[in-house]
Length: 162
Image 1 (cartoon, rainbow, N blue to C red):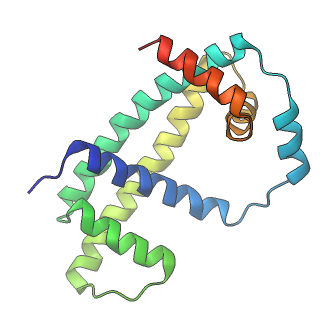
Image 2: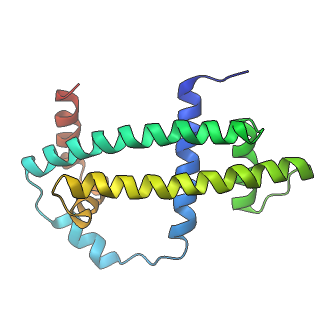
């Protein structure tokens, strides 16, 4: 039985973020750099360009997420079960998984990881093709997390386009 597209989108987003979290486990956060980013001036034009780029990047991600769902299902797993096994793997939880399920999970996980890498490359291409540097895009993203007023401006610009 298929679940709603919204639910699957949330699950796939979690999978993408979980994979990204694996990468971040090994990276150090430079607090001074984060504060510098927050304090940097971001113009309305920067926000408008960031919004255009983000919309394009989200379209790319949605296509890849649909492919991830297909790969998981083609491996013979329900997306929810894949998510359950993946979460158990990430958090070292003990759950009951048959050998066959584990093989299916491994097959799907390998494909999901390849697609995650493809998504990362495509996202970077979208950003760089727009003329904005990846570093600047990340600076704006970080600033939006810490500056409520900037975030509200971004939301207003984003909503104008809908």
